[in-house]
Structure formats: C-alpha cells, structure tokens
Image 1 (cartoon, helix red, strand yellow):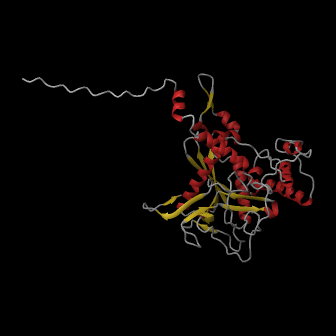
Image 2: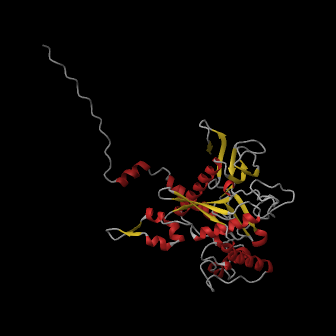
Image 3: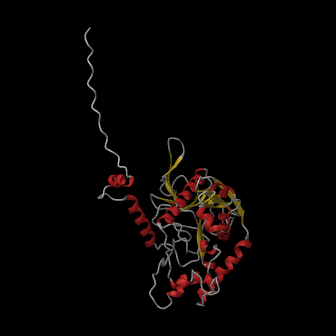
Length: 387
C-alpha cells in the first residue's frame, strides 16, 4: 500500500507584537505628524465662544432675572456702559450647552411631527420668515426645507425685556421649555438636594445616587418656574393664547423624561417686573444705578467697579441700529397685521422674524445647534425626517 503523502505545513504569519505600554501603542497609532482631532476641536470651540459677541447686551435677559443672586446694578451697568464682562467657559461646559441645544431640537421636531408646534419658521431656500403652526412647506416658494425659529417674545418697549420660548404647543394653550437635567444642573439649582443623595463608597470617596436624585424631582426648579412665568407674561401681553408652561425635563444620565405643567401666576412675576421697570426708568432718566444685590458689591458688579478707573474695557455684544424686520426690538403689533392661529381675537400682530435665541441664551447666530432644521418632504416610511 502506497504511503500517504503529508501536506506541507502552512506558513504561520507572525502578527506584529502589541506594545505592552498602551500609551506607547496609542502614540504609534496616532503618529507625530498627524492632526489631533479632539485637541483641535477643543481649541476651536473654546476660541469660537470667546469671540462670539452676538448676544444682545442692551436689554434685560429673562435668564438673568430669575437667578437668586440677580444683581440689578450689574444689569444697569452692562446696559449703560456697553461693556460685557463675559464669563469664560471651558470645553466641557460648552459641550454640555451644545448637548442641551440638541435636546431642544429633538423635542421641537417631535412637537412638529404631531402638528402641535406653533411659532416662527424660516425657509432655508428663500429666507422667508413667517408665523405658522407645523407647516409642511414654505408659504412663498413651497420648499420643504424649513427651520423652526422658536417663539420670539418682547417687552422691550415697557420693561426692556426680550427673550425666546422654546416653543408653543397650540392644542395645550401652552408655551414649551425643554431642560436637560444632570448632576451639574442640580448642583447649581438645588445644592441641598445634591448633598442629600451623596453616597459614601468603601474607599471613602463620594458619588451621587443619580437614579434616586432624578426620581426625587417632582416639580420644576424655582428658577425655571420664574423664567417660564416671565415668558408667559410677555406672550400674553403680545396676545398669544397661552395660560401655562409645559416643562420637558430629560435626564442626562439615562434619557428618562418627565413633564410638568405650571399655570400662569402673576404673583410670581410681578416682583421681577418691578425691578426691570426700575432699571429701565433709571436708564431713561440717566439716574444712578440701583443698589447691588449685596448692598455694596457682588461678583456681578465688581468687574465694573474695578474698571471704573478709566481703563478701556472690552465692549461686547453692542447692538447695532435695528432695521424694521428685527423682531427683538421692533414695536410689536400693527393695525394691519392679521391675527395668527392661536391668538386672542383682536390681538396685536404676532411676534416676527427672529433668527436665533439671542436675547436669552447661549445659542449663536451662526450656529445651527439649537434650532430645528429639517426637510419636511415625506420619506419612504411616511415620516418627516429631520435634517
């Protein structure tokens, strides 16, 4: 019997050895001459924020009014001097802001999908801006590439206040505020709540019991309620048919969501309006600044005291003369204006033409983050898709 021939063994390909030091391995993979993507992005985002001076500084922002430590003197000095001592933010904080803006866009898109969303819309094709309820195409050019520009609100003529609400939910007769809530939110809004849910680990370090802390939130935070009440006051003065604020809270750590609805209550907003009116009247009469919130000097008005020696401080966010289409400063209402959907009968014309959340928020005019942008043409699944 013939002997079986054995096949020659296959050559074993030797794999390149993996460095035992992971940092050496990563340095090899990255390459000394290649760009560091994350590092470049970090630098770009921080520098972009430093250079951004688009936020109006000649008005009172609802977001500053609702803080427990709001200093009317600092607001007065910012408006009268044109100097904005802008707070510096690191990349992590700016990343958090952008995550919140993306959440706004997501929930606004969902309200749009169910035909609940009313407010200002912009056509990305012809730049037409108009007030509508969940439109499917541009009223001028019939393009389906639309963008939601939120609900511009202004009481600039009477109280020097202007801002934007995240949306208007017409069937519910409600404005909409979207908030992403995490450990940092609670630390800022209610530090005592955060302390209650600190857990000591075996090694002595501490961490927050996030699920328990999230479950403990049963009502909106006080500053959010005050902000919503200011928006409702402005909206009702403009003739919008709303009597409540709907808050959508989304947990940052597990994306759980809950809703709170708060009715309009003038008793909450009246004291804040009195302070705003006092600031406006002092500015108009060229009077001295109101007292500091601390009675002498606080961290908000201290920079103005330090720069009062005549040094040339940077002037940020100075508003240029406004044209007639600028909704944030134009006189609201017109006898020729047609009542928009969801407004009281016989009310003044609807808020008009806001490009961005500039009066009240960190969103920048040149940024796409924070607004709803979509092509409303139906997809193969029959749903409208966000762009």
